[in-house]
Length: 516
Image (cartoon, rainbow, N blue to C red; front, side, top):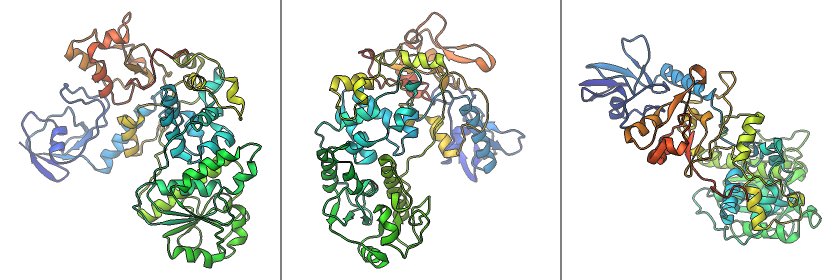
């Protein structure tokens, strides 16, 4: 049987669906409710296509092919319909992709992942998560003004987590982490070694750029030394600096002045970042300026001189250390994009639940550690013990999606540019079922695709999941009187792996020690 998909003719078997025909034509069709081996029951409508001669769009997963059928699978009309279907699903998706603590962190630290590593006792892995984001874990653990703790959802319940104290704890161990990345991109020079310059050098090196760090004084650190010893022990700062110096070339006593000084660096480097703080306005008077400092494009950090970029207090005063570190990261990512064409910035997409109602908050708190916030978390000079750190980390409400990278709904939303807030309305309440030994079930993320229902029915391994309620209150769950484990039986792991929205997910937090 002949079918044409986006101008490509393919031969398919008579019983084939349009989805199969598209696959044979090399055209990828997005799906959420489809699962190989299961009878199609279209409900998500993200696989729709346009069939020539038909008035309505058709779901590719359930529409059989016909001789001579002509299918439009990629036009703007089709893509807009898929985006609308995704936005309708997202409008009722009761779950954060990215936790509030990470969302408000200027440096984008993957805080929930680091806390989970501490809860599991893998302290070195936690350090690596913190280190990847800033390169200055010990500095941040002492000087950060803790916006993440203000954003922590548990602050609405009985006190936010001591995240800064946990980062300080992670930095207290000896960790072999300072292996240089393989140089594979053009070299970059950074002028200034304060928080912004150090952060930029760290991220540029991680991205594969050989880095020369130019500092006019005889030691790295810039304004950070003004916080020693009152807020930051010298040995802590020195430890962070030693780690970076093993990966970048530091030129101490290197004075760079004026446009000629920058151009001299550009002879041996593909780009130069000016990160020498408020001195930049006077040192580089030939560059375009604003009333606050050097002029730099807000998106690209590029200045008026080709190849020269600027960030941090060189552009405008930045007081908080974590914001200066964040400015260095953004500048490094911008330079990397300018030199290679590759965008290394993490996609900011997330569904935001916002403030949880008391019922939902109590439910999530019930599956977390019941201990109150550690009083030692408020002492910026104290270092938690391993037991104290695990106890504090286990207080995390786990309100971020631990499997967001595998969530097909999120991946498709990013691909199609879907906006979670396009359709206004009241979302379902966030809920969590933590009773299963291997899985976590969050019904508010379920799109009623029915994959788990059909898998259990096919395997005959449990009593099965069922539809509960009706209309807008329809949801999937265990039959009344049965547990999640009884409902899923031996098919539990397969159901979690097949779930397109992480409503069912494999457990990544420890089970059985939540209340130390």
